[in-house]
Length: 350
Image 1 (cartoon, rainbow, N blue to C red):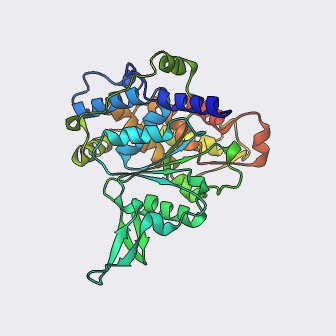
Image 2: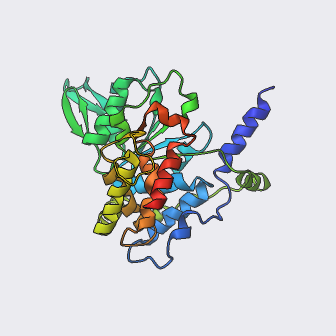
Image 3: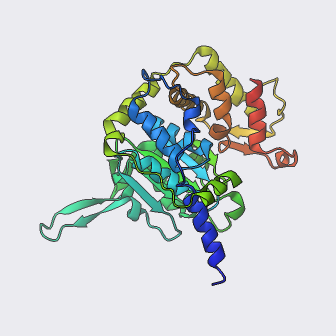
């Protein structure tokens, strides 16, 4: 009985994410007349996420960008901050096949990739597909608890869009949105750090924090209020999502904005003569930084109902796109600035 108050507190935090629907976070930047770019189903999805998940605006925007670019997103935060709720809510607003993988140190690659087995009745050797082959939205929870050989299977699926089973490469689904979650750095003892190559495959990395006092209060005042699920006719199907992804690719970006992206990454790396952080304090930015920033900016412009990237897209996405791609020398950690603060300062000055 001594643990009952803690359990009740955890339940309150989790149920808070399903409280009343009057929110406008994702829609606050979306023009109501964006009919040329966004159809009714897409707007319903935005409303659905805002209703199901309170707060966590950066994380909600990140998973939408990941879906629209058919790429991978990394979520970081302590247990009980609705990482699973966020992904399940997104999947529930679509007809896509959703798979959740709970990573543990004893997880075997065959459990997520699949394996070739013998059909008892026919005697034929057949492939039993694993979650990486079946899933269109795949959520790998506590990714850094998985052994490196399992992480290598995820990397292959993210980078090559195939899964190798019994020495044969099998393609993943045409829509393959991969989301991984891991606990904060302070609680990673005994876990397996992601490789540089794997980190570089995530288009964005965002953190989730505990619910605010305002969100807790809203739930406590109306603990029994539940947000209804979307009706089937409002759910995005595969063709809808492929169409949306194609529209994102059509979002324009000017040469001037591309130059700003290159300037930003050079400044962060410390190679630009005008950089305040020169002298190799920040020694490396992974190779896909510029490409990922442009992809994310196109998707962000689309979400906001625009057909062209502007400089604010670059500035606002610089931190989530670059934070997991930056490698620091040990001496930098004495400068009393976090990676995020440095990137934000440089982005604001470009």
